[in-house]
Length: 376
Ligand code: FAD
Image (tube, rainbow, N blue to C red; front, side):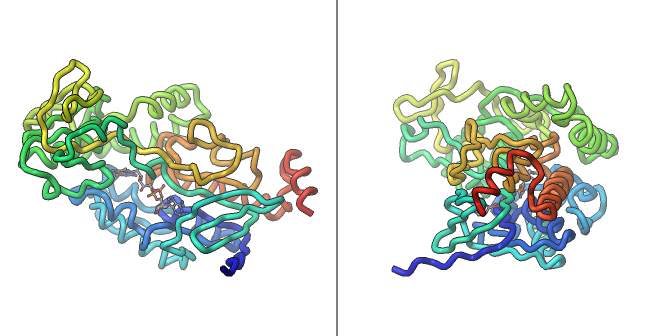
């Protein structure tokens, strides 16, 4: 078998969603050579593949990435397909070199360079930007395999609409934003239970007049400027948001009640093939939709920087591995970091650091020196 030839490029960006495109925009602005590798067949697919009725909770005026406003009335809320199409147009407008259909299977370091393996392709680079949200690999509790095979089970990542479900009752497990919105999506056609603790909710309608002011205060001021890793309140909020989940943004508990969604405690296991709640109730359902979150799925990063599945970093920079960066992760810097209104700022900062390191031969920290000497 032929050994694949190695493609050498100064910077490889892994992930071509909004985080990767934002990084690409800023790398282009600095005139640096790079390539963006993305596993999906098309730019925008991460959005396109979400459930059919999904609308963004961020209004259009907050949804544009750096250099290109979102083309819609300021206070409208785009559909997920409109967002996907916008990202495709963004990549085309700035001629960003996205290579789709390439899933990176391993990232290692070989002397001074990173090695990236993706199927039968091999890349070597001085810099790698891992640009993706923390929502990559669906998480489902282990006891899901003990449920009766006649129960239709889906993760929220695979849910598209009620047409996927069998007749009968639905249990939506996980009462965060996705779970609450999916429960409302199915309750018209199925008896629906939403399981999990109340995570709180924003106290106004995001699409009303009060919402216009409220959205600005919450998303632009609090989430972007106040709740950052640089403020004591921001560090406190970070701990809560990473461990407990976020408040409901669009859906209110009273909307769920009015629609007939029954609230229950957590699902804790399976008995005789049926889901069991923390109060020991057994639920006779024919469908379970797991809205139980995601992990970043970084097992392919074979570098000693991981702790509990997440990289150690300082605002996206990894002092232990000079040249390695992260953008898009939940609360990377601020509560807005994994969202459209926040990703551009993180991308700009990381790329400014990368560009400065390139122009200085990356002798930016004393920790770099032994590594660079070894590599020569
Ligand atoms: P992703 O969109 O997840 O893109 C990552 C890309 O990396 C994907 O294309 C994937 O194919 C690729 N990839 C992953 N692993 C590899 C690999 N090993 N090799 C190569 N490529 C790889 N934010 C808002 O601002 N407003 C909203 O209204 C909003 N609604 C949301 C609704 C839902 C249901 C969810 C889950 C999130 C929502 N978000 C919202 C948060 C965030 O904006 C989105 O999750 C957004 O898709 C994150 O973009 P990203 O580029 O960081 O990551």
